[in-house]
Image 1 (cartoon, rainbow, N blue to C red):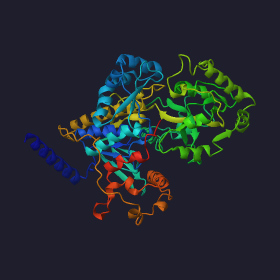
Image 2 (cartoon, rainbow, N blue to C red):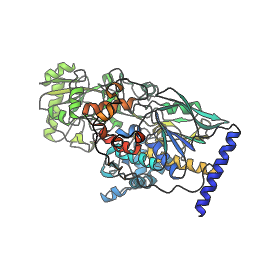
Image 3 (tube, rainbow, N blue to C red):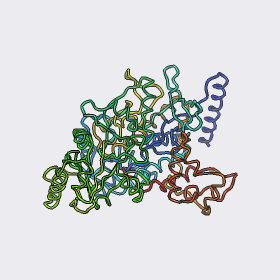
Image 4 (tube, one colour):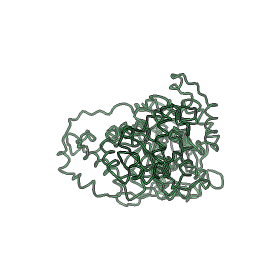
Length: 602
């Protein structure tokens, strides 16, 4: 009874407050908090606030959740977890702190200390409570012990439970909306202004608190080059390999309110970028995993351990002529080759990549491959012959890829002789992937100003905040999604506390909803496409290339190519009922695996 009275009192107070604000000409808030970005950091923050009773509105440029995390491998760096204990791995915050700071060199020690002490409870235990399942551990470069926790379903299996739980807890979403500026009144951020992508309508969304969680800038090559490490050679060509919306727009928002920035030249790039044949007009790249290949520069010489981490491989590549190289492999290597991301079936790889002579050179012999790739005569033949000798001996004497203490335990150590024709040469480039610097935040997730104090009403989390500086100059892997969750949750809790202090919400948290792992019911009968095509000319719609429809066009084009029924993704719409003909976001989230299956790797 007391709780009921308290809620009734809070509701009455809220109504009276809104009436007073309206009568005085004061803009009425659209939410208690606006989160800009529906990636894993923004979703984590939104869920944290919603569970505390806040009305949260998440705004995103896209029409789908998850950002880059959806197509990521999904691994998390977690310290002293039950998964480690079950595997007999002895880890501790002290061991992890040393690993982080030694590997990263200039990591933010306060954030590292917080992360290593709290990742078990605030990431592992929290994720498990939402239905996330962990599979196994990897021991990756820079870590004293196995610490990379693989998630069942990869990135999609990690981010979907967070999103669907947010839906269950009442988090609201506004899609296809680009935020262009922050509303600042009397020195305080009080909302955002933006543009609806599909209609170009201008919108204004007001809230007492705003969080920027827009991701990084690694798909904006102008920003990548502008913030390039001045002590590192700049390659002739670099490809954009992050999410399409990783344009650095959050940095632009923060710059307008004189926020403080840090480590913008700390970029975690890969060396395995292949120009994406689907977008020849732009420098988009695919992440190629060719574990049975050797890498030679344009002179035909091996130049780095192919199993090396990005920390060592990127500088080695940038110091090569042209800043690019050839991945050389045979027919066995072709069978083993993978393309990062979803939807890259064997047939698609064969047609779009191996069927494109601009991307891949093929020849029945190595001398002929030398000519096709314009590699100096005999250089490639000698490099392959020497590598094959090392394979027979069981030790790579030149670069310690295998048979020594320097190589990592990645799949590329499972080497075989390159001897099964035909032979292939694939030209690869640096691939811009993640930014490890950005908006400076404190340990409460508040955005700091150039003058040193917090920017009133403004928070940031995830990649746009440089992951708090946890990585320093180099990531240990699993230290991107993990810090995104942690900084999101920390910022969400601080925002919740501030909303309480402002009297915007009461002290009682909303009762917890059932975990998001509960399956969405699907009882309707399967229906064929004729039930939809009578109203929707899908073939025409996917070719319009309309602003704000990129995901609609991409996903429905894939569905057409695969010959799937509409009911495979929209079962809740069958049988057709005009009164109930709307997409259920919970049901839709369960269908993302139709495109983003277990092929999604990062």
